[in-house]
Length: 346
Image 1 (tube, rainbow, N blue to C red):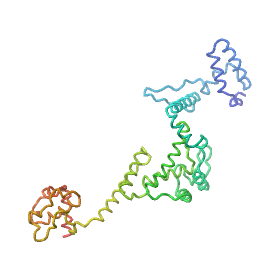
Image 2 (image 1 turned 90 degrees about the vertical axis):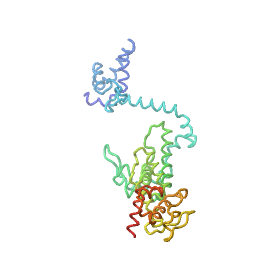
Image 3 (image 1 turned 120 degrees about the vertical axis):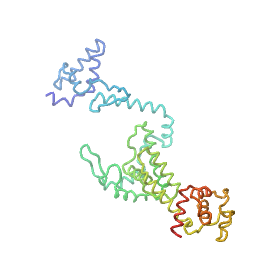
Image 4 (image 1 turned 90 degrees about the horizontal axis):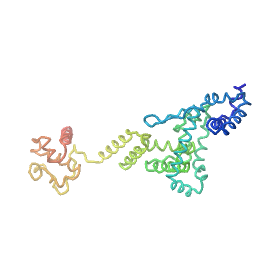
């Protein structure tokens, strides 16, 4: 009989009454015991059963205590720990509200009301609608999925989202839309006392997630500015987005594109340095043409050209790479590489 009625017994109410029965004054204790007996009797228990009943359900367990390192472990299968955790979280939220009241007021003033902060936007409704055909309800204890995915959108879900709004094709445009969704999330989180729940709709969350991937690794950087934006985005994500290979691919591709537009040093197609006459076949060995004055070697292109110019002189052919490098203000490795290319194409 007791087993049949146990789940219907209001244990929270019983625990509160029993606390008075154990810690109240004499009059309160007697009244509390009578109330406790009246509460449990219809369920097949006596007042003598109350301590064991509450202990079995975790109501008389000790609350969690911080470890030596200051960390408190909560056993969420224990009702006493559940209540302690809820109190601790509410205390954190209250402290956060006190420290961030100006932020909360600003958000509410901007939207007009708390209801407006959390009202689904037109974009959220549109994105939710186009992904609904991919939704599959999860079983007991399981989450719903969309085309088999729960966190990141599949290829087909991405295509559906693009039917509402095309995906951006530059990193700055992707950043702008990503920040829009992040701002909406932050506003809702502020209005909810920093509870850090999932505040975007499912479709918007998929969109936000995919935008992060586009910025992190998928969109090609057009220039060094894009690479810097990508790297700063990765750093700010604190490990969520950290595809360093994408940065390397960008730099290698941009470097190759830059080199393809430079004159081919191996064929001697090098413009003369500003302020220095081009060396001819007849006067290459003359001292005044052996090197451009150091003040004019102010770019990498000029320094490489100077290496070629020196190596083409009779004196330069007898010099060590270190000497050539010193005159042209480059590294011996660079001087050696240029010499090899000239030899290969001679």
